[in-house]
Length: 211
Image (cartoon, rainbow, N blue to C red; front, side, top):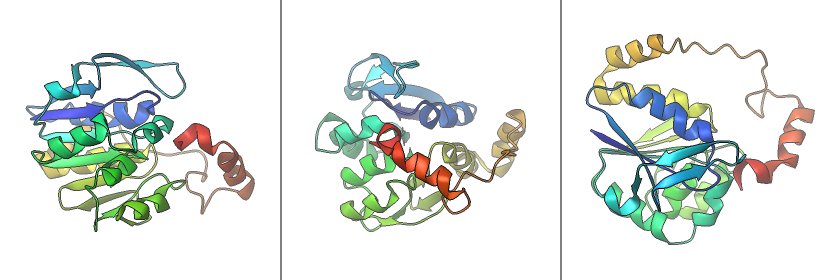
């Protein structure tokens, strides 16, 4: 089972690394990072590079596609190599998934028309501009498409997807091995529960987060 994780300049690292670290433990999984060109690809902070193992053209028929979000996503919303590859690869996938604003790339590629989907709360409503139906959920399954909300939601989605692929016991083994039992110290992970001053602070730096 080949799992292709898309990389592009200024992606959000956890969007890619979190699902990678979960899904790579599935039986028979082969994870490959893909980009327009092989080589290092920098995250949005410029502090981390992941190595793209292959060019898009070298991975034409993956079983699973995973698209991270990040402020660099905005540069690929017009038709070009990434959207073209997403459409072509999606014709062969068993699952097509995204984290955070990565769902906007799936939507821009025309893959989410008429489907329910989610994204980071800052940009979730933009899904409707591309014919998707945005909903406020941690992650959403609609057919073979699975989208996650912002950043950390990619981990929850990855465990849920692992269960769909290999069964709940396998996913639970991976969860326990990761000791994944989130207990955040603050109730600030959602704009509905975060203090207004915190919401305002995030809105003030919106461009560095998702666009």
